[in-house]
Length: 250
Image (cartoon, rainbow, N blue to C red):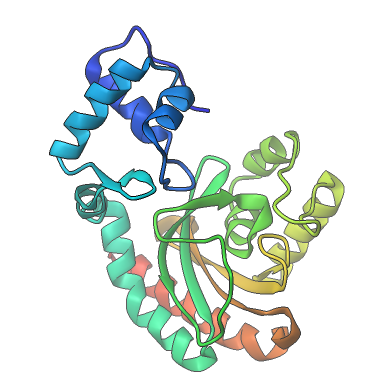
């Protein structure tokens, strides 16, 4: 459910309507959009018509979904664009070394936003997608970011109700804190079937100027083929290489 902006400007209402598409991306029918945004059907219809004309929404057989214009604009956001361009060579090297699905993510609030993803040779049903978000606590990338963020952030996250994406998601704050402490010591974070059953992940933080964790990258593999000792060197090497590049003045 998004924030209700029934008394706001048309621009504010348009933003509320677009927020409905987070995190699934749709599609939604007009009645669904109206209900989720808290608008009347007539107001929603006018807004949707304008957004379609602008290319911000598109209409398909199953309903409305986000338009290509939004992807074009989003790809031009300087911070993410520059990070992605700097990271791609290292992500490609990591993919070549593992032949597994590779992710790059950044933190926004209590969530990880996926900036890039390279599909592996295994057919994995993953909830991650470029531009999409998942809880920090249920993903390898998120745990790596959380472990190397200021301590007060971890305290804040652990004080909330921890989300559950699968039956394996860690919802016990004490257990999660232990996992974060272990990640700090090892320089690697692990996630085992916590975001998608049958999939495990190993991740490492990426540091920018001043030693701040600005991103994290990971490899996701089928649970049966999860061998951390084999994957860890490649993940660590990619993260270190990208960190050196960022510290050198991206």
